[in-house]
Length: 148
Image (spheres, one colour):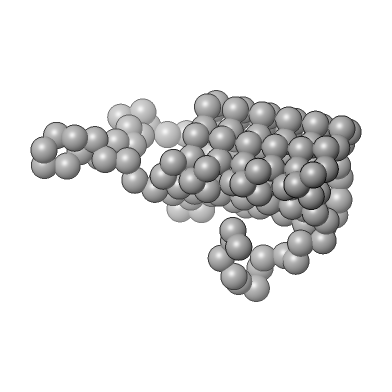
């Protein structure tokens, strides 16, 4: 539903349902989907936070997709995708970042290479705003990829 179908997308092994509230850390070596509420650290191979899912704590995974809310830091070894209704209050660290129009992100973003080194950006080239011919700002889907 949230991820494009490909052979690299792991099967969802654990689901925290919409009527479930969990307090404590969740660690799994498989994939996890959060549609309820989690207060604590979340670690998995792949994490999907559904539209009504809320995580209050840090999220660490290979891939993270957020459609709900996260109040905490997100670290993903490969990619983070923020869908249109995502709300993030915390820092992000990843090699690839996709932010859809409508997503809300308040925090710092650190882009890293596959080997874990931080990518330094030239502030003059990192403005991220486009203007149309009328001088109005246009917000577009932002994609950052550290593999280039």
